[in-house]
Image (tube, rainbow, N blue to C red; front, side, top):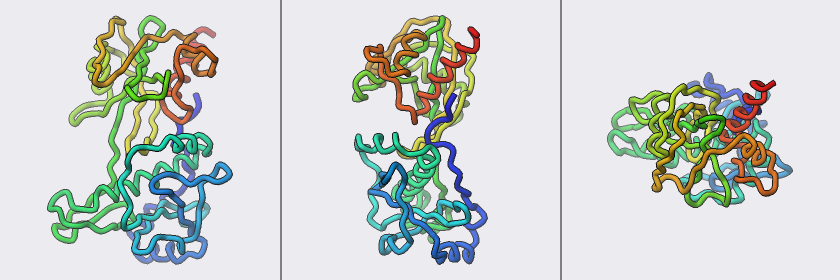
Length: 294
């Protein structure tokens, strides 16, 4: 099984610098320091790599967010004073992600989620006062009530349910033609991962599951989720779809999954892109079957 996309960053997140004002200032003064170039929240890619410039290219009146150190060199992202919150994702974004090395995808994911969080949390959630960036951009502080706010990550379960050698795949409205994936949904307050898998599968497809097993996880920076990939088992393959959530669903055989993953022309469905953890899940399912039969 290949590691999921957006994982594998080799950067030192340098937590020790975030609360040290002198060390942080020294990092900003470092002539080697690099600034990630973004087009809004989208990556700028040249020769299949992210583009970096000097801190002199930071927007006037903006804030520098410390991403960490690479070989001892400080790397930053910039929060422009007029930066917009994330909107619809342009189709070309995913084409760019498809060419980036995995470790650079991970670095971009952190930068995008961090910048977007700042844009969405300029005011205190407690009293409404405007907040200021602290700790190298990894928190915001309210000057009025003293509350501190930290970047959030929303847990999302994504799962493959198996029943008699087939897996449940589905698609939402507006997805690319032919694209199918596993079911997914946010973990709710007071709920375990296993409970979320069972609830979402029942709510969306009318299928009761057991034997939930964790497989892998992936940061998903649109805007800031943690995808928690799992498998589960069902004894009944009857489907009752929530049409507000799903456009279609079906039980895919191993041969159908293998054909889609190989990009075979005429395959029953189009597999998720390689950087999506749904691709990792399907890959792991096929590999597990191969080992079991070997």
